[in-house]
Length: 97
Image (cartoon, rainbow, N blue to C red; front, side, top):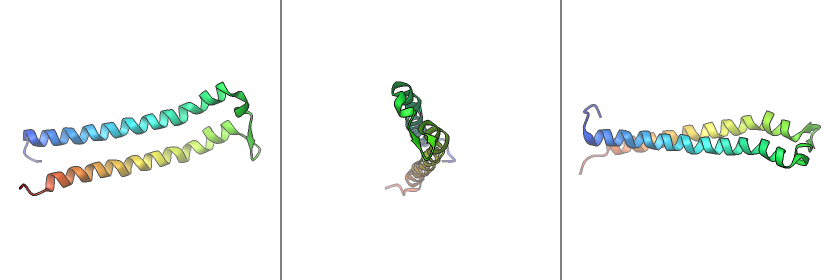
């Protein structure tokens, strides 16, 4: 990859495109997952009045359970991004036939 060949550029662009697609997909998961909760509570106010362990459901979901969700999405992103990079490295290191 030290040589700036058209094939190398195409491979790097493919990696960047794959990483961008992954980031966009997981951003949509976060937006849908966390963005749907306030919408749910606005559309169905009775759900927002539910109490679990003495705490309102919106507080539990948005205040406490959103953080493990974000950590899980972050963990998945790192794992899949590293897999993309490993695939890229495997293509680069593959002996030419």
